[in-house]
Image (cartoon, rainbow, N blue to C red; front, side, top):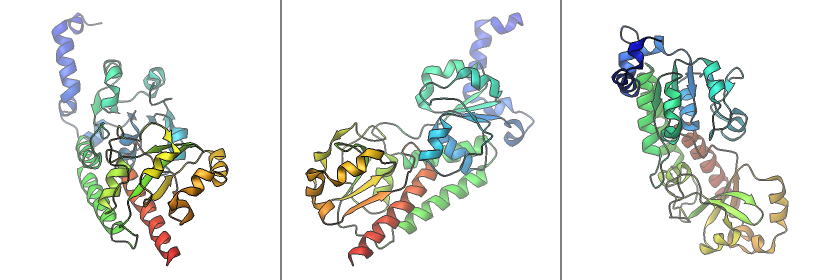
Length: 300
């Protein structure tokens, strides 16, 4: 090792360079030329890269991502780095990235990541804060880092237009909406206004039947009778639904007693990534507005 590299002032300078010096590292080259092997840890950032038509060499928990996010699709050659909560750093080294895209949820491992490659971090989901605007900022910032600013701007505008158009559908917006995942036949997770689903729900013109913060994703499993608090609400179930939950619910006296159930105001949505960015926002707006419009048509 070069003796100079072991000196504290050198390490400090290098860290500053890695933290803020993506531009300095690429002097004389464009970002697109420099970052050819990108690894990504955060699902929101993975979605954003794919939306910008940047395919990473490695990402976390891809089997689950493909089941839940559905879109954008991940090419089969992308290496899997293991769990989002504990990414496999040895696999990350083997992927030989020249850039690692992370988020604020990985500060605990940030120093280790910097030893592998420069790190750029953008956070979309923060407890208590609606994430849509943060997803726009992250998309534009990442597009700027990667030399894809026009694509990022176009995607932000297209997403805004798609959600605005979905908000003009025929769905009944006079009723509040519960957005839930089913934990099992007796418990639900509820998405509040600080989740991507809750943020987009409001942008579509609906009122969230659960106005409390839910730590950016969903409230911890709560008893099914929580849904009785707003009897006039429509219930939107975001898949996946546990295999045994649907059959048990259909025979549950409590479930059948909810006004939304016996009045036909329950819709089941296909899977959408609750930890996503603008691609998840677009997908959620589309599938929810379609489901709610069909609900109105059915009752008509």
